[in-house]
Image (cartoon, rainbow, N blue to C red; front, side, top):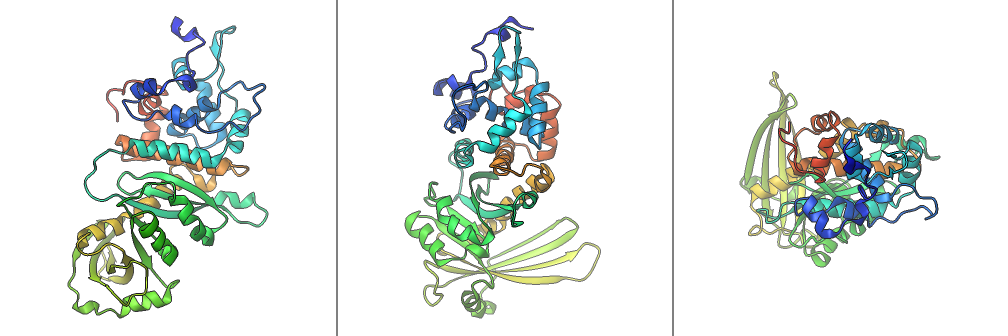
Length: 405
């Protein structure tokens, strides 16, 4: 073992200056510095493991595929000394070894930590990793997700429900909030988006959020735009959209594609609605027709969807509207990753703030991997699981490893 590993000062990530963090992370915001803003829920007496170190270790473990508190502790117990040093794990100079946190400590702390502060810290860090000067208008998707495994822990059978906003292009969750139920997503919409700079951005949301208050909030308070799907929860608005003379509106954008054993054709029409629609700041109405068939069959099914947007015709082309409307599925894809790759719906983490904290860690890892260039999250987790030192390179705690697969 290198003698440098016995220096007690190693691993104290909390003490890194902003400049040192920037150099370690390649001039990007330092994860440890952002996590240091999360308040420690424990009493100061008797603390053996710093909160920042414990949180960074949890992120690294989930990056390597850990799905539970037990798996996080097992990963830390198996990590080599130089990884533990870089993560800030406590060093015992008398025994000459690092002392990673136990499963009991990890569980106790992550169930008690301020989940809102953790979401804000990681969301802000991921936002700082997004490439500057991207071409085109920013598009953010808002959607909710129930943590189904938590239904067994609540007396009323209600699952923990989270509402999140994600950058469509980067597939990174920038903010997340807990709501009491799916219908209460409406009241959490403005508080979730309020702290974010949305100037000039377009926000996509499903029919639940096609609310007049949301439209006014985005346009008047946040200087942003919206694309809202409209369904039967807004019957009058949907009826007005359906009655528009669509047969006289030329197709603005057509797209064909194949995937998941199906062929799909999508046609988007958009028309200006300067007056008469009765929805705040509505500038255009959108009709999307989808035709699908299972490959190898001749039978097509079709459906028609409607949406409304505050973007005028000179502000967005039909192709751009189609891209943003289609891009909304990216946040649903992130939810799918949490369920399939990380087994979220079957997670045994059910008490305290644990479920939301684990969801935040999964969001963080997915955002890290997406912004680092990994396309397959499951394969990326397996890659990091084979060598614990690889987590340091991805987290910006060491020079990037050569030959990344």
